[in-house]
Image (cartoon, rainbow, N blue to C red; front, side):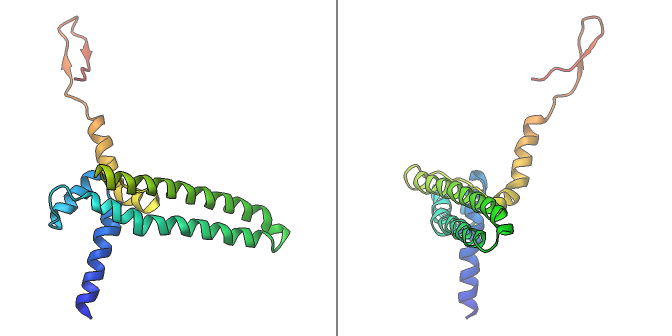
Length: 154
């Protein structure tokens, strides 16, 4: 029983959380998990098929629930229709992104992070680090011309 639970947690962590990481982080996780070199794309592929497609289906089902709710009372109609359209738009965007991720991972062997709040929060430190690397300035030096101080970005 314990082995089955450990196996389940490992699978969920590796493919759900691991498949939600950025490309470089997926490659690192694949190396840490002992996957053969160049096999990190499987994290994206399995995440897109087994996590992304059901998530998109959930958005579509949620939209249908709001459609049913809109017919109950006139006060609920406008907010329900707005939520319905937003839910269907999110489901469509999620499905399109996950279809692209699955096909690109299968045919081009590339890793992609999915679209969503959880992947964004999970990858926020990596995104901030990448933005920060581009914003670093070189030390200030003085120009010989007129003793004026100038910042030189190289």
